[in-house]
Image (cartoon, rainbow, N blue to C red; front, side, top):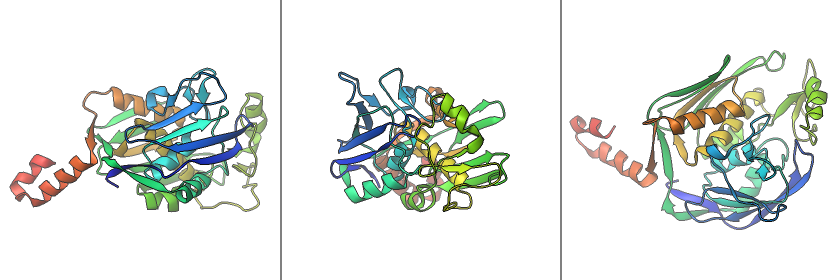
Amino acid sequence: MLNQRTIAKKVSVTGIGIHSGKKVTMNLYPADANTGVIFKRIDLPGSEILKATATSVGATENNTTLGNGVNAVHTVEHLLSVLYGLGIDNVYIEIDGPEVPIMDGSGASFVFVLKETGIQTLNKSKKFLVVMKSVEVKDGDKWARIEPAEKLIIDSTIVFTHPMIKTQRKTFEFSCENYIRQIGRARTFGMLRDVDMLKRRGLIQGGSLDNAIVLDDFKVMNPDGLRFEDEFVRHKVLDTIGDVSLLGHEIAGKITTYKSGHNLHNMLCRKLLETEGAYEIVSASALERKAVEAFELPTALQPLFN
């Protein structure tokens, strides 16, 4: 996938927000090269567009939100993850409510809809964010790091006291095929004991066994059980991809996380962007030429292109 991509035609998706509990419809439209991912709240007259970037992130409590105040779109991470997972760089999204619909709690519904809609290749090279040096952020015993690598690799560790989760680790090497097969179907999850507290705080108003894995003190409550033995950490990888996609480009770098969440992911993106010399933006065509030149050059000259 050397060229940028968009969707082939308009498509609509309707569902409820897991936190707001409100029914919402999204219309996704094809967009020109270099547009990026754009959201617009059509239920708010005169609202400004919200571009999906790391610096436009507002709240990060239990979800990733673009914008602040009334003009905001909540819980964007699953949709953004799927767009990155399918290599879709440019799309314009109109939404008539405050939150992206949760669907079944994973990215599977979005994968299905977008693949059925079709993906169009544009006549413009993709751009890659190539990590040049390691950057790390910490919050207590939680941390996240990004460092140089030839492709996007995510090494995620989660730690919960629950007997069904405990400590889980997943190392994922990105490709569209790997994403669809290994990550896209992994659902969000939560503890039954936290439900009342979260609802009092205005969260998970639309949560149910239909759109999340719910655990009591001992077991998974969903009748159909888990989709993967390690579905919990796979969903963390899904969230991480959605959050780091806000860097705005395909990523060549390894991301390692320990007990991370949306806030830490956004902190990592912002620190990378603010750190001089930590990354370069390179077109896919330039990377391809560089690889070909390095392959064809005499061995003694190849280090010049590394």
